Image 1 (tube, rainbow, N blue to C red):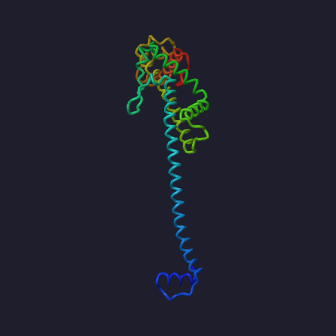
Image 2: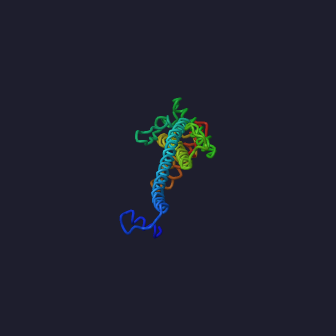
Length: 251
């Protein structure tokens, strides 16, 4: 601000001697003051606009994510049914999963109950087919989720794209874990029953190993236990594969 301008301001505020100035000079002083005030309002306006725009973007992001959450839960439920898990597993109110296979493993055999046997056999076949090509399966999940969420690929925001990819990977891992857990639990229940009823074992090598284990002393049993456990597990999974007509993912 120039010296003359300062004098004008001092006079305007009631200080100092009366300066010599023209009307144009006085208008220039007021113009500078008006410009400074206008700048303050412009800065405040742009800050408000930026905040409003950011809040709108966050709302759009959250709304899109809510659609994706609902859609992917629907897709996950569909695949859980496809793998028979909704029939073979019990989910508690807290989300905990109960792998109690006593309903479909009866007296050392896979159940003959149509619903449970079908859930086990068809579920195993579907899971094996799907997980043979994990990338293709992941793409199916992605496309189905966007379709159920009624979102086009190009509409998906970057943050939600990253989130959706991670969520799909997590769901795929969870379902694979559940399918394998059902099969491993079934094999364990079979082994437990067969140890108590060795007459059900038709494989001579496994039967001889079990007989040797039962007749051995404590030190010999320690040497045989690992080999016996592995043989019984292989035999149990092989039995389940024959009964289901498809290889077990847990093998």
